[in-house]
Length: 148
Image (cartoon, rainbow, N blue to C red; front, side, top):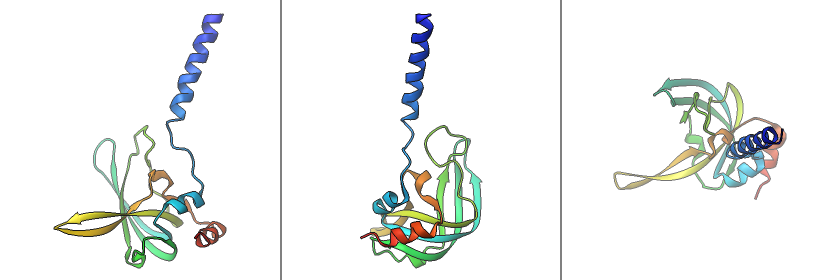
C-alpha cells in the first residue's frame, strides 16, 4: 500500500512540475506595461499556410481602430498586416491557433532588424505569443490608455 501511495505521489509531483513549465497567465495591464505598442484592431481576414508537421504561417489582415499605447514612437497607422507562426500540433507553450474574427487588443514589441546596412524597426508579437492577443474589452482598453 505504501508503495502505491509513494508511486502516486511521485507521479503527481512530476505532473505538477510539467504544468509549471507552461507560462503563467498574464493580466492585460501587465502585458501592456511590457509592450512597446498596444493596438485595438479588427481582424478582417486570416490566411494560414502549413509549413511542416509542427508549424503554420499566419497572415492576419487588420484594421487599426485605435492606438492604446505607443512607447516606441512607431508609426502604428502603417500596420495593415501581421505575420507570425503557430504550432497547432505542438505540446510546447506556443500559440496553437490564430485569433478568430472580431475586435482584439494586440500587444507588440519593436525589434530592430538590420537590412542592407539599414536598421529597420519591425513590430513583433509580444512574448510569450499566446498572450499577444486579448479579446477587446472597453474597460481594459481604457485602463491601458491611462498607463504612464
